[in-house]
Image (tube, rainbow, N blue to C red):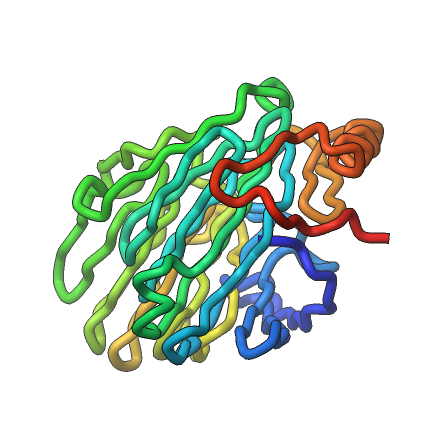
Length: 304
């Protein structure tokens, strides 16, 4: 997805709360398609390696309608697309063409540069669909910022499931609770899709200094405080954290080690170097990212 600049309200709970920051993303309407941007914000640029976090939808597409994110470029990051419902067709300059379904993972490492598009696939467009999902960007360590671009698809059944006492969690990426996802990452992290029955608890992995949860559905209680859906809760480091569902709830839990220095972000480009971003601007403007097989007739121009 392309980065659309907008302010994101944040609040800071009391000094004794394990919650350091509450991000309440504003809603951006992209022509009948809603997006909530939780990262980056003015008060919090990253959580572990996660530098961008968009909640897409939910949206009901009528037959004939869908999303059409035209070809656009990335450098210095990996995109992670994860759907709760619906489907999206990914294409890129490597020749990848993959339809992603709920519970599966599309992981695209941009590295030194790649372009891709994301559209509703023809079958779903013809019938209509409800679509909801998360698009994340994971910043790459400095040593890997210029790595060779790659794309991998992981079906839902290939990802570990963790179940216990009213909790069901799919490990999207990284390591948690003794399990490891097959998704290849470049730094220590965890990313979980968690469903909780009423009253069920989720203890967050304690070995990651930076942790957050995004509440997709329902509400939770943390140390006597209650929080409702469509908020990103960023936690203080080193605190023991346990969430309790107030009713049926679904959330994304994420985190990892702090990055090896700050990152600059402009449009779809992420880098530790401002000069590298300037080079990426020139490369896209001059058509040096290449064409996407099957989707080479249009593109998103470089913003003014």
